[in-house]
Length: 248
Figure (cartoon, rainbow, N blue to C red):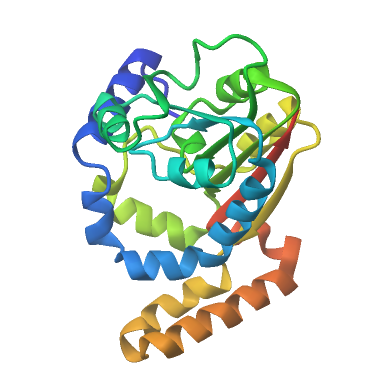
């Protein structure tokens, strides 16, 4: 990752997510297509988080506008706290959920005491950060026996990387989809880390979307998901998405 300065990177990320995040993404990849591709990954992520929520103190890490907060509360979390670097995101999240504590905070240097949370969750946030610093902070604020679950993009598939090069406006210059070295850094801090990867075969179906009915396309995506499960670890670094399960 390019290191201009940590403060420059943090300020840029905050301004970007205040102003443009989501609007550019929606133009580049229609929501119904993205949702279809990510359905199985999202279901697996939600299953892990839902199982851990009841009775837990939960940190929504890089919470954005609070997209996960309602689910965390409905799944039995005793307390939910949300943090994000973007003041605009935190303002909108606070307007949606009045019974949740939100903070504008740097995820790499959290102001919480050690062992503050039982569960930490986030989607598409680690790849914006210094992975090693973030991992150590996550480990610090997790209680013994705690768990952190993240859904993140991977950075090895050449076709996805080509798409990223042609759509620079969809992301900040500091983002870095996770690669082997990032996973190794995470595993150094969390030796028991588990991961499961998603969205490989289905990438080849995207050019067919306009030729197929929505029902037929969705059926093809489910078939592709089954092929990916069969391929398992053979295709892991060619996948688009990983779900990380970090044990403290």
